[in-house]
Image 1 (cartoon, rainbow, N blue to C red):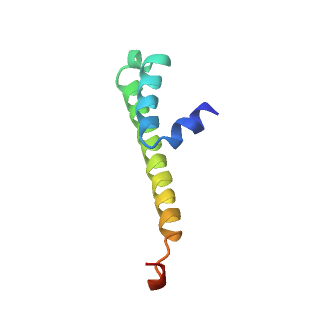
Image 2: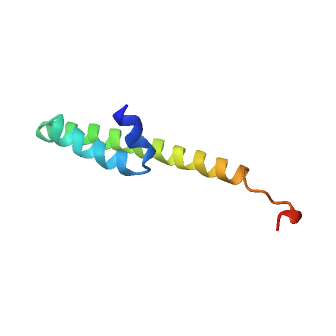
Length: 71
């Protein structure tokens, strides 16, 4: 889906969620509660992005050949 594709691009999803919540859903008009909810959504997307980046790095490190004969 569109949201999954957006999450694959590291930190873009958190910025997209910020604008989506504030302007598309209209939470900017809800005041403090709208900003708090938007902050929570943005933070959760950021944590998910960090988890995906960590997973990719672990996968890359696992595929590196460290044997001395490979050099």
